[in-house]
Image (cartoon, rainbow, N blue to C red; front, side, top):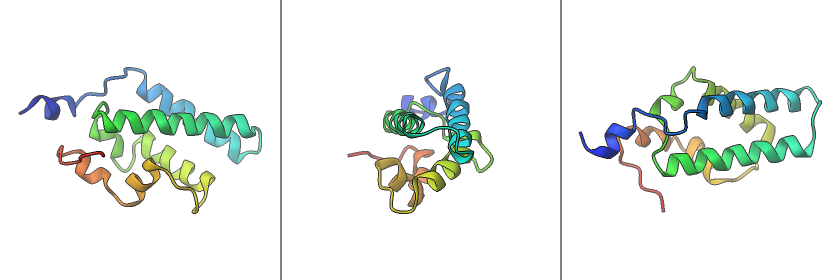
Length: 109
């Protein structure tokens, strides 16, 4: 097993799941009409954080399991941002590129 594959079983940031839960809470606030633009900005910052971690293979592929908190966040976030929203993570998720993440065959440009 090479070093990169070994790292795939770990999530480097020990607070990753706490960040996911916070992002889920922000989504709930937006859905309930309690928050505004700053909440949306914080969600975009979280999206950028996730994107960088994925690019650096710094999160476990387990985040992409169907029932994971991350995938729950993604579904809610995608709904909030709408169908016309475009970002690197959006493309990664909508095109199911994350399936290649687990086997280490994904190359970011």
